Each structure stands twice: as C-alpha cells, then as structure tokens.
Amino acid sequence: MLLLLDIRTQARLSVEDVHELLRTSGQCDGQLPARSTLYRKLSGVGLKNERRLIEAIVRVCIPDAQRANMLREQAISLLHQAWSEDAEPDQPEPEAVPDDGGSLAELVRVQRELIDTQAQLTAALQTATEAEKESAKSRALVTTLLVLGALGRPAAGRVSAPSPDGPSYAVSGIELSRLRTRLAAAEAERDEAQQVARAAQHRLAEAENLLTAHGTGSTDPTGLSAPTPTGPVEWPTTRTDPAGQAAPADTLRSSRQALPDTTAIEREVEQGEGVSSFEGHESVRPLEQDPELAEVLAEMLRLDPDGSRMGSVIDGAGRHLLDPAHTGRYLWSQLTKVEKTGLGTAVYHRMQRELGLADGLHLDFMVAGHDVDIKFTRGSNWMFPPELQGGLCLVVRADDASGLWSIGLLRVRSELMHTGSNRDGKRGLSAQGREAIHWIHSNLPLPEHALRRLSADTVSSIFAKASGQARTEELFLQAQLTPITTADLSAVTMQADGVKRAREARRRLAHRGVLVLNGTRPRDVEWAWGLGLPALEPSTWMSVRLTPAQPGHEGTPTIMLDGTPWCVAHLEDLEVPLPTAAFA
Image (cartoon, rainbow, N blue to C red; front, side, top):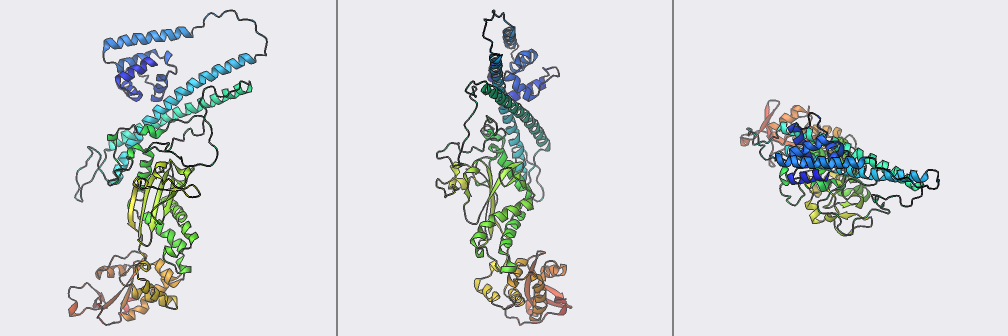
C-alpha cells in the first residue's frame, strides 16, 4: 500500500485519475474495479490478493518501462512477503493454563476482532473521504453551470451566438450531461463507502459491548469515541471555525465518528472551475466552494426567476394580518406588537405553499434536497439562534413604508455575527455578515396599494365619510389615475363586498363625468389603452374624469362613447355626465 501511495504521489495522480487511466488503457482486461473498490484496495483492504491490479497500476503510473518493471518486481516481492507472513507458523507447545470455561479465549478473539474492525473502519473512512471529495468536485461543477444558466452569465469558452434581442449565453448540453453522469456515479460511490463505514462502526460497537461484558474496563481502545456535548447550544466564545467553513456533513452525525467536514474538501476545488457570487459582492464566498448553497440558490431562481411570486407572498401575508375587511387597516405599522411578530411566520407558511416546498428535517423546509431556515425582518437585520450556525438560511426583509423587499441566502457562521447577544442567545449579522449574503432578489417593489400612496389628509377625508359606499366613491374621486386594489376597497368599505360597492360607484360617479375602469372587463382595458392610461391588472380598478373632445384637445388620446369622442379632462374642464355606454 505504501509503495503504491509513493508511486501515485510521485506521478501526482489521485485515485480517480488512476481509475480513469486504468479504464482508458485497458490494463485490467475488462475487469476494471469500481472507483469505490479501488479506493479500498489502495487503502490496503484485500490488496495482497490483487497482483494483476497492482501491476496494472504500476504500468499506468510509470511511463518509463524500465523503472516500471523494477517497481513491479519490488511490489511482487512485497506481496510474497505478505503471503509468507500469512502462513501458519509452527506453534510451540502451549503451556497448561487453568480452565476458565473458555472466557479467556473468547476475550482474545473479541480483541482481535476489534483490531481488525478498527482497520476496516479506518480504510472505510478514508474511502468515504476520497469519494466525498470527488462528489463535491462534480457537484460544484454541475451547480456552477446551472447557476450560470439561471443568471444568464457566460462560462469560460461557452458563449453562444448573439440573438436579435441581445447577447445570450449557453452551456454545452453534452458537457452538462457528462458532468451530471459523473456526479451521479461519484455520489453512488460515496453512499456505498458511507454504508461500509456505518457497517464497520456497527461491528466496532458490538465488539466493544462484548469487551465490556467480559469486564475489560475501557470500552474504546481504538480512541475513536468522542464526548457527547451536553447542555444548551451556545455560540463559540472564540473563533473555532475558519472563515468560510460550512456545516459539517451530517451523514454519520449519529455514529461514533463522523466523516471529515465535506466543505473543507470542497474548498480544495480549483478556483478557476467556477464563478464567484454576483457582481458587486467581491467579499462573498465563491459559489463553487459551497455547493449546497449554490444548489439552493439555483433552485430559488428557478422557482421564482423575477421575484413576482415572492412579492405576492409577502403582500398576501401582510393583508392577511391586517384583515382590512374587518379592521379598515392598510399599513403594517397599524398591526399590534403580537401581529408584527407573526408577520414572519405568515411569510414562511405562504412561501412554502406558493413554491411547493417540503418540510425540512431540522429546519423550516427543504430546497434542492437541503435543509433551509428562513428569517424575516421589517428592519435591516436578522437574529440567529446558536443552533442555526453552520446551516443555510433564507433572509427576507420587507417594508411597506418604502414599498421594497429583498431575499437572500446565507451560510450562518459565528464569525459573521455581532459579539453581543440577547437573553435568548441570538445574535445579529455584522457588517461582514451582511456582505456575505447572496442576494437572490434585492429591493424589488411590493405590489402597490392606493391607500399607501395617498397623503394622510386625503386618506382622512376618505375615512371621514359615514358609509362604506360613500367612502368608496370618495376614494375614486381622490385617487384618480391610481390603481386601486381589492385590499384598498376592503379597507375603505370595511365589508367583504367591497367590489360590489365599486360597481355601484361606477354608476353613481358617471353622472359627474368620472369613468371607473375594471381590469377584468376587456372593454375597460381597451378604453384604458385608448386613453393612454397605465395598463390595468385583472384585479385592479382605476378612475379618470372625462370630457367631450373639443378643438382645444388636438393630439389628446380619445375613445368613442355613443359615437362621440371623449378624452381625459383637465382641471379647468367642467363636469359633464358620461353617456350610458360608460357604465352599462
């Protein structure tokens, strides 16, 4: 094993490189072992029975035929030595020992089994580490290409032909398919190696239990056990994890010895194989160094590429808590303290339903097969509990006063937090932590509502009216050329039938020359387009005062009502009742 390791080191070849050379050279005569098997063989497991494999490895690693023959003979000599050591030596006559009922012999057998199991476990863990490294490299490459495709950014040497609408970028489908195949094979081998490690750990535990039953005292002669932490989870008081380190792999978290931190392996991926995070965030950890984060990022972009679904989620959560039909409230600042606390929970539940996300194993939900938490704030920071460190978290911020919202993804790490914490041990992000956020959508507008855009005096004059019908008509008079939503109507009428009040206002206000348009009526949409008004959404209303087109209105957009041209009225124009066609 040490000889082959020295040969590979001098040739600067990894196990996967050796496997590829064996496959392409045909040295194994059609009996090429799987990559995971090759890992175990090169770790010393069953190697002394693989003379042909050893000779093939020497030949593919050493191009010099003379030196290859010399090393091959040396390897064969070592194999003969190993075989001779396995031969049963002549044993001296055993001395008479007291009859202990066979317990001593059983104890010796168990101890030997424990030593053998320890060797198998060490080899299995090394194999799993190598397989995880290969899986991480493949996953990083595939994820990088997927993210590039989602962002519309070019990979090196992968620029497609320009289109009439502007430049576009494409990733080679053949290359992506090849990488996905490589990723699937690497992950399968990783899983196989981890199963072998679990089996070895199980046998190790059984052997230790037998030793304990025989009263040998210490139950862990291998030194593999680790103390189990007790008490509440706390943030480390000193920096114990290097910058950029992600959560340890939890594949064998419940076993006696976990596999090495996979993200430490992923950091060995060459920097040139992927891309960094979005422009403008140079200090953010490159995506190829955190494949899990990159996969979640790509999936969120796929689920909501323009942010419209998430914007609707946040707006819907706010309207649900405001309950305008019963309370007349229309601003988040009008919520009670308890309701403001529940805004984040409402966003979480609506987001899960809207995007079809499954429940998480330990955190809020699963995205691209990874546990992800969500934190919401109306301010500029979030609070993270200590048990979330190392995990992935979607951070959402929104404020109806500014009308903007953002969503980003973060790997929670202790060095990104403020040193101080609240009584629950939660900490906020430092300036470095805010820079480490990978923004999925930043400062997008929330759906507009007319009551939020009107001045306080105007809103007061609307709510001063005694009835819901009168308030609805005053809203259409005061907020002309402004999209009015059903939430606005519910708040003004404080009734569930706000739309009915709007239809009644359409008929009443026509006598004052005010045309009330509804986005669900095709004719109203055509009139809005003919008058040069903003496009009407299906669930919105808009009012505008019209006047018959006169010689002074040349060049003004007009529509025909009962054969007469009408246009948008000026402030100085008198009120003229609309014809019946305007409210039929």
